[in-house]
Image (cartoon, rainbow, N blue to C red; front, side, top):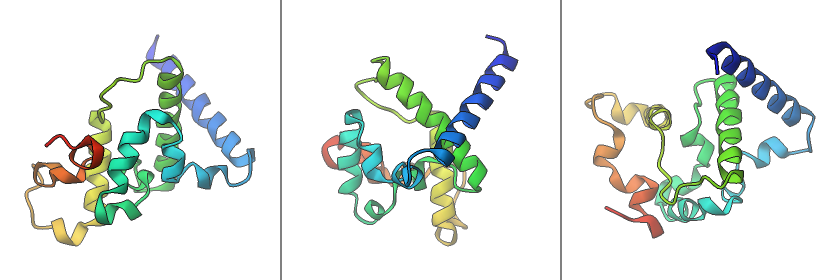
Length: 148
């Protein structure tokens, strides 16, 4: 598909999702920001359990780490893109057994770590990722998914 068509389709997807959320069932937007919503898809149960047993971060909703939070527009655009991708992958039966975060997702999570912990990380080496040292913060490092 040509790049221009991809942009048009992405725009329509975002606009359609925005209209649905604005005009859809009451509290849909608030519900879709909760960890309970994220785990309503059974393939995410292990990640939910790992998050739930993660100490301080279990009071942080999934979207606080996994969606851009530098501005509302970016947050909701990526929420629509990631949400629709997840719906398509799940309904197509293409969910991998080992769910891994994408490169874009890693960058978003890192930016959110720095945003929340700005005063603690202002003097450290920015060439490393947070999980280089904080391995148990990842879903794979805690709960039923502990691998390290």
